[in-house]
Structures are given as structure tokens and as C-alpha cells.
Amino acid sequence: MKADFSGLRTEDIERKPISAWIVSWTFPEDRVVKKTGTIACILPRRFSGKQMVNIVNGIYLAYCYHPDGQYYFAMTRFRRNPLARIMSEEWVNIGEMPGLDAHYSRDVRVIWERGDRDIQTVCWTEPDYYQHGPDGVIAAKVPGQKRKHTFDYRNYRSVTPPV
Image (cartoon, rainbow, N blue to C red; front, side):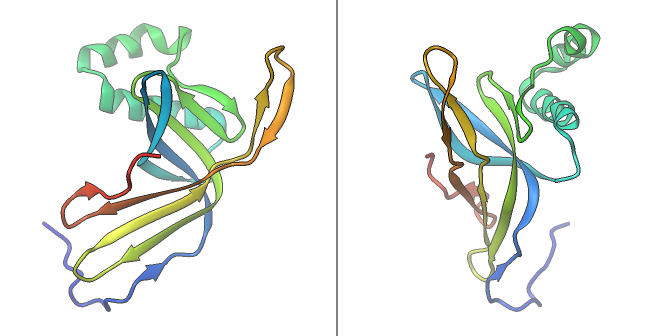
């Protein structure tokens, strides 16, 4: 059964910014990781990095592995070699193809354009990170990039081009 929002007002709604985990897909192409911004889910801020590893593993297994692969992972690989890694307190990563990242952001917002189009845009800023030099020493602090993803629910397709 499809939800009917025809009785609601048609002006746009912008939700207030919140702190949350953004779990999004990344697709490496030509040895360069390009962020698509495609969002797998938005999760509450109360999850720790260790909890996010388990959640990201579960999402990745559900979308990318056949039942036999899920069974093998459950039986052996999880304890010895988990897919997800904690890169920092605010970043959990699966570096496979496709990749899955979870970033903690303090300014997640959703803008809902209602009416004929029914488009939702999720905006967030990724956390700052440290860039390492060739000798392994921290070279610079890189500010987090602003990201957004727009999805058209009427036509069920992504509107945002890859970044």
C-alpha cells in the first residue's frame, strides 16, 4: 500500500540539522574513488564506531553477497577478517568494490520538495581528516567536504550526478 500525502500542504519542507551517521556507497573507477553520494541509510548519532562496523558489515552483506557468501562470512570471516574498518572516530569504511562508507556528521539536513516532483535532498558535511605525507607523518588537516544527494521518489531515480 502506497502512502497518500495528497492532503498535505505543497510547500517545501527543510528539516533542522541534526547529528547523525550517513552511510553511503562509493564506486572506484579507473583507480580513483568517486563518491556517488548514494545514501544507504541515515542512522542516529548514539551508535559508536564499533557498533557502526557491525551495521555497515550487515548492510554490505545484504546488498553485495549471495546467501552462500553471507553464510561463509558468518561462520569464519567475521572474527578473523571483518569487511569494515574503523578509519577514525567518525569514519567507518569498506574498501571493496563497491565501497561503503559511514561518516559521522553534525549537520545532516533533509529538504523535501513536495508537490508534482516529490524530491528529497539530503545534505551533510563529512568530518575533517588528516592527510599523511610520503614518510607516513601527518602533513595537513583537510577540512570535510560538503555533500548532497537528491532523489526523485516519483520516478524512483537519483537526480544527483556523481562527484
